[in-house]
Image (cartoon, rainbow, N blue to C red; front, side):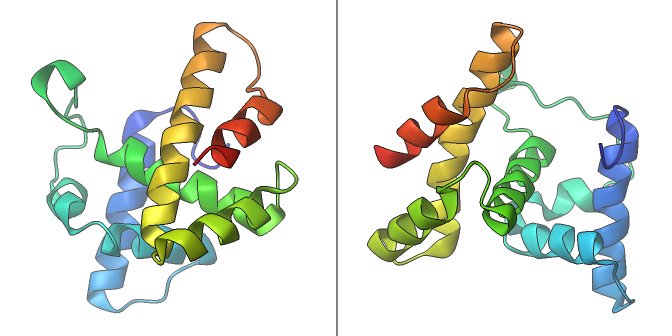
Amino acid sequence: MIFGQDRRELRKAYFDAWQKHVDGMPLSPLEAQIADVVAQHPEYHDAVTDADLDTDYTPEAGQTNPFLHMGLHLGIREQLATDRPGGITKLYEALAARTGDLHAAQHQMIECLAETLWEAQSQNRAPDEERYLERLRHL
């Protein structure tokens, strides 16, 4: 794991990467990826500049967890960089061509990834890569 299991540590990594970006400081490759994802989500800028790293985001309160959402973007990017599961890059390219918007294509993929991860977690097993790819094929 890149940041371990600690929620504050993970959120601080987003905070630090975004602050470095805003300040024009050099970024590590991972920080650059984080800053790029944050830049694409102005609606989350407050979350990554707020000193309160312990905020709970709950669906019951009508909230989307910005860190989860941005983390899923990073996950999609990693999958595309490694083409794992095999074939995901071609599926992404086809989806991006249909939507005409790379970011919108990633958002559609995130829905499939989140569903696959939720399913795996609720069944206490590894994510089913073939089921995930099947979901992506239906987009």
